[in-house]
Length: 203
Ligand code: NI
View 1 (cartoon, rainbow, N blue to C red):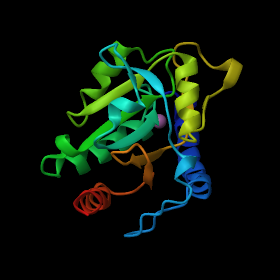
View 2 (view 1 turned 180 degrees about the vertical axis):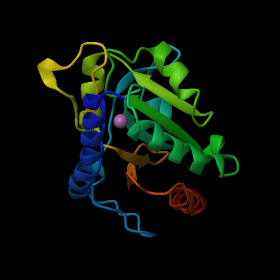
View 3 (view 1 turned 180 degrees about the horizontal axis):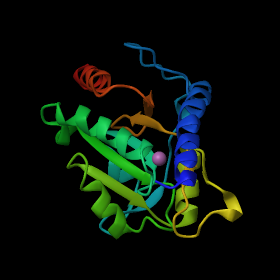
């Protein structure tokens, strides 16, 4: 690993925790058994994107099931694959999860994350994982709707091929009606996510 890569990976981790905290302020937590409805308009909303098969999709395509949204990029050295593995582990332990849940991995690096790249990437995770990419404007809109921060690490000096992205690392759970239910901060265990998902969908 190049030294610069190590430093940027650390900055990615710091952002993950720091912005997780600020997202708590933006999106009131639904503490434990209590699903609050106030503030739900702060997270989520209409979007259009391109899935890993190159098909245009919208928020409407995710209605009818609970959907977990996670934002990141396929070149991410550690945070994104680790988080997607945790969510995948949680979903894999739930009977019939594919009938109840979508998992959407939204890239915040659409310049490199083409549908083909996304297709290869999501194949490493839970079988129902959907990869979403699109134009820079598509991604700007959906990231804004979900209060996701992202920026190219290193700015103008970043290598044009091997740059990293700084981004917030929060998993959002939306209901079958498309409304925000709760988030899972980076670091939530697979078992805690699984328990929460089972409770919410059995309730
Ligand atoms: Ni990442």
